[in-house]
Length: 294
Image 1: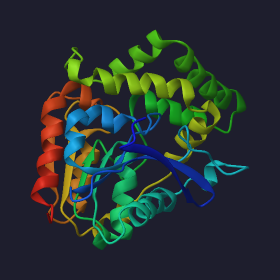
Image 2: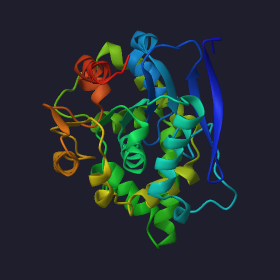
Image 3: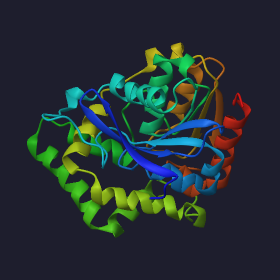
């Protein structure tokens, strides 16, 4: 890791949450990035590449995602919408004091930043959610994992943890699952390969037990009633072929947040960075530029 990017840990509700922080970005637009479920804090720097040089940024881990750690005795009951939002708000206070950072999140990262904006809208400049959600019941394979992990039937829970271990140990299987989450575009763009590799690396480091707990817990979360409290510029992006967070959910977000901009990525599934890399990066960068105070 270079001297200009360092790793830190943030304490919140018994969690130790990891983050990458640029150290020489003073004077540039401040941004907090949050990755999706089963990914890592290395995801967003890999997605944006050289464009990160134009930002004063922090790439924040989701709770329980390596190298973050969970409290002793961690259970699904400990996973709340308040936890996700509080981590983002705490990151803003710790690393951007006196500033109003922009928020960018993918999938569960989108959920986290939406909750943070509902809690403290005045603390942030803008928000971009890509395949984010308010209602935590996912579709397709991830939804099936949620149901297994949250089942009262012990063997189903064990099968969920076993499946995470299989994904960690068999890259071909992980790649097959990730490709299934794409939409109509079968080709993975060359620009997306670094981000794709971070997902492969994360699979080998994240705890199967913690992931199973997170999957089960998120399924019961719903922040729909909180969305009306969001009062900053919001951009909601979703793929028209996303089977995990379907278009109906992104429409639900856009319709529940005042003046939200709704962007549909035609033919794109859940893996925006692999299917519509250039378009997505431009949408993120332009939204930050438009709503920057600098």
